Image 1 (tube, rainbow, N blue to C red):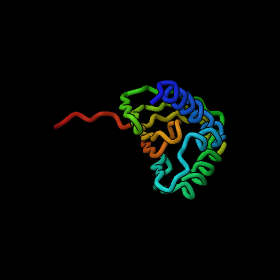
Image 2: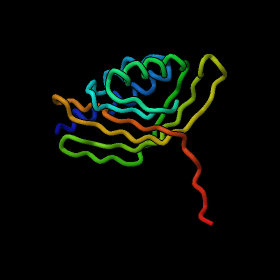
Image 3: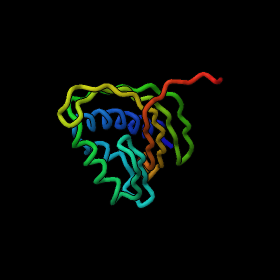
Image 4: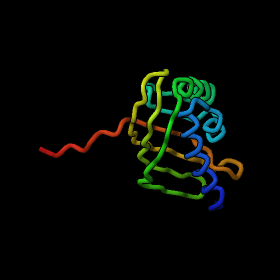
Length: 136
């Protein structure tokens, strides 16, 4: 594995997430694997499996966003020879369907696979960050 390949994928991932929030799905579509086992459990609910479902869902999701700003907090990363996983907290503000600006925080787990020398996103799960509850 090349450290440069991983660094390139992580830089692309941050830029791609920003572009989705600006209504442009193309960079995130480049980051994703286009194979049949790719999955997404996105913030709009449901799930998609296989590039024939995931690609159009990315287009649809991005079409609802504009004027986005994005940042992330890296929580954990495990990088193996051909599989890697990241856990992040994504914080962003965006207009959804032209409405007023809204801010959100997501808990995000992503799995990457090395394909032909490049890290490709094969799974993404994002859901709202819920504040920690105290045990009773």
